[in-house]
Image 1 (tube, rainbow, N blue to C red):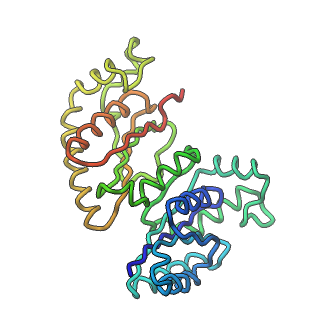
Image 2 (image 1 turned 120 degrees about the vertical axis):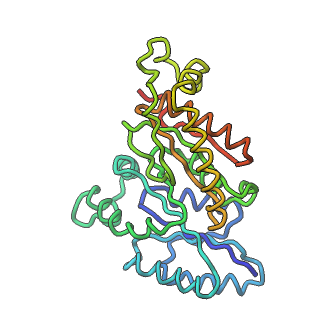
Image 3 (image 1 turned 135 degrees about the vertical axis):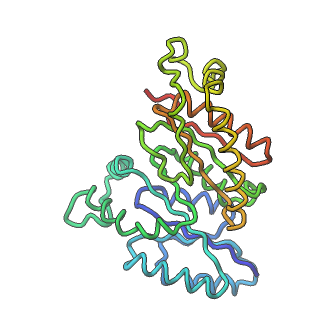
Length: 287
């Protein structure tokens, strides 16, 4: 029997429970708040269930200490026995986490005698190595519940992953910060900015006039040609390594004109190449 195992972890308040509930809706057997040292026992029980349990989600967090060491040891022991776990790490920026904790009026599990921000900082530092080793990192800072469910489903729902690789192209504005969960970030600020063209300023990269302006600038076509080839190369490499989901971010200053037009055009090209592509515009509509 081949057992699928996903470990959901990450920062408190980043959406671990939401992700786990959606996976449960998709048919996964979910075990919440399981100490990493007991993951092997859970796998043994599943393997002995005669096929009754074939897909397990384990939700674990920093309440088990020493967390990082326990989790690394558990996953290494499972790999030695032939069971490889995929690790989903959820995070969010401090502003989003503070807002979420304030809304439920609960203390952070690691804040101790300090403040909420102190607890967030301690947990972020404790999980630094775990984040670096995760198979998929999702930043939920600007995601609502439904968007998070879509992202989790795209990564772990067998029905949604009929294509070998689920590729998301996200436009963003540098002035609002980098998408921290991006696998690759490229910069479109080398192109002239439609913001400085009065008739184009109120429009977006989804409008024909802005799209035509951006794509006709010197270097735009060459950039798209080279980046398309790079993404194809990456896609083949990801598949060889068993990676099913990738987020590619395309940025400009405000995330309204150049990055939107370039992301849309790149998605069209990659779709023609046979890749499964979803386009998201993170900062479209922001001032």
